[in-house]
Image (cartoon, rainbow, N blue to C red):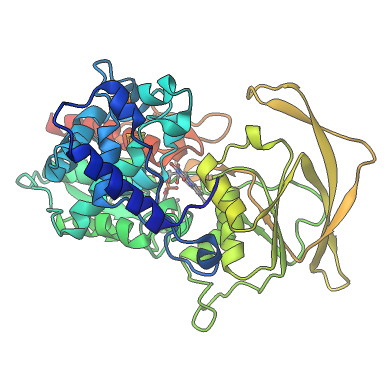
Length: 496
Ligand code: FAD
Ligand code: SF4
Ligand code: SF4
């Protein structure tokens, strides 16, 4: 990934667009494929590594128009099959090409509640953009039509123009629905159920709503104001919000149903329980789970050292363990919090890394040092019980394992040490057991995820579930899609 200054990108777009506008003949597919794929303007890496502001600054109107002109409007639209909520992708892109942004926004809103979020964080390269005909013909997935960036452009345009309207709510039905968790799954159910006129109360364990979109994904990838806008819309629709409310402790599921008069509940508590490596030294001072590190930085503003109630210790040398999006977010946050060196340690190679290619590229541009085919054996301590280093082993790849990825095998006797003062463990999350433990009869699978059928119904009548608590750690769009399905099912049940 090579950083291209934003001005150069936007100047190029203007020139190409002027040239296209001089044409009198309609564009042929080969003309469309000759239009350069529009890169995302972004902050210079040397600047952004010192601030929390969004890295990608968004397409200009010219870039969006040009990118939209690259779409071939395929009859079979393979891109739609790649989108978990089957957005009418050619439809909204054609509207941009025609200069009708409002129509594009209306098309998007039919299938997604959170286009500004999905346009930013969806793994498009493995979803809608993977089967795109343009990428296939040009034999380069990076040349697929940039569907996510166009989606973000339209959602931002609508918000910045002040055109987002509060959706109409049908007359009150007198039915009460409780939603536990305010991530993408919970927010989607809230909107869809409230529209039908049912009373909606959202319960959130944290002091702020938004789930991982607020406490996990950093500001420099997803500005919190965007998520807050969605929450404001829900409150304007009449949804009630109870924060610092831990269902299972503050009140049990059975109480909500039997004593508080809820007609249905939707559990969307996510997968927020961090996994650890279970190696020597994981209890030392200076070891964090990525969840704790990111939550302190994002939600409790630990980076604001003068004012934060729970500031993070100033690290000099940080090791981040893992290779997913969470690891990239933690490593890039550590850079911004002033660490001089950030080492990302992963036991496979970059090819097997689950993180988005774009995030890996951004992390490298910002100076994160990648250690591939290495894994920690133990964390080393100084005499006061603080982290002083990490002992690693070198690895090589064997045959593919159950996940289809080649199995990492440790090379005996390859131990070496890296001097560090902070370790962030980012090797995955499980679901929190609290609701499972306090709700007799609620069936879960061997990983502790709630079992729900294809309509979101759980083993207990009137209780529905969706998002990461059902799927295991997944994605925003999948959580949102599950929310849509469950909301339809709840609305149907309450209509009887
Ligand atoms: P969550 O977003 O996890 O929200 C659950 C909410 O429930 C939380 O607010 C939690 O506090 C609350 N809760 C939990 N227990 C209780 C309780 N007992 N009572 C009340 N409230 C409770 N996905 C992508 O698509 N793209 C990305 O780039 C991406 N990056 C990620 C980066 C990080 C750091 C993390 C952690 C995840 C990332 N994901 C990404 C995954 C994505 O964010 C999740 O799949 C998605 O948010 C799941 O949505 P959800 O609604 O199921 O739950
Ligand atoms: Fe692509 Fe995500 Fe938008 Fe679907 S919601 S079109 S997968 S960016
Ligand atoms: Fe456009 Fe690509 Fe979808 Fe075809 S597959 S309609 S080119 S976005």
